[in-house]
Image (tube, rainbow, N blue to C red; front, side, top):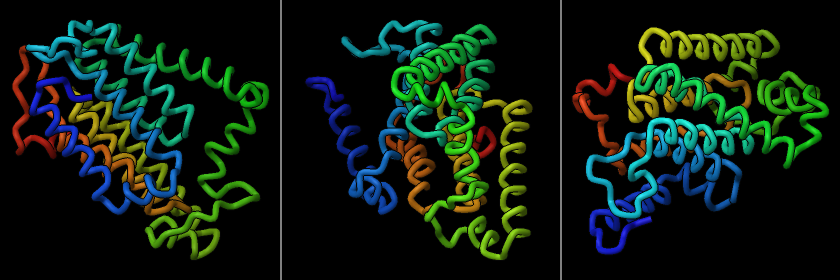
Length: 258
């Protein structure tokens, strides 16, 4: 929300709106009213809440004076909403968990994880109690159905590598799922070996992970690329303050940090 009298805030808001509607992938999702834009919005909110408070916060800004503990809890709660809306957002949990651990320490990471789990369970219990009573149904709908491992298949199909492999038959489907699991393992290993140490690095790592998931998944639509495009667009139109005592990442370090 731009602050009154802040010209740069108005410019940023207009630029963010232009990015949101200029991309065909994002524009299509906004036009047909899918669940993906609000899921992306809560992921971005979680990233924004995880960012350190600016050195000179604007009066009335929600991040003004926020403590590391408050940032971890707020980020976890916002991400829990995204995860409850769609299972796609769960990939952001380990990415942000690794970032909090690397940047703020184990205690902040545990606060983030606890807030995400508690908020997600509470929302599921209130909004979808059947999922609590029948956890196998949730696994079937959230995990097995997107992988094409249920009797009813998703109608989603695009000319992406994973779908093309699936069209080759059962062997191709196994290869697609295997590549997807290998990519997930690669992202997990990267989070341990070189965890992201700030919000931009976490957003880039998440964008890479989601892009791989959509490229290699057995039945995925082009529209799902709303997520990596939205994450990169958010990075392009926002300026996240580096934490005190750290050196801002140079453009040449962007690929290394990702």
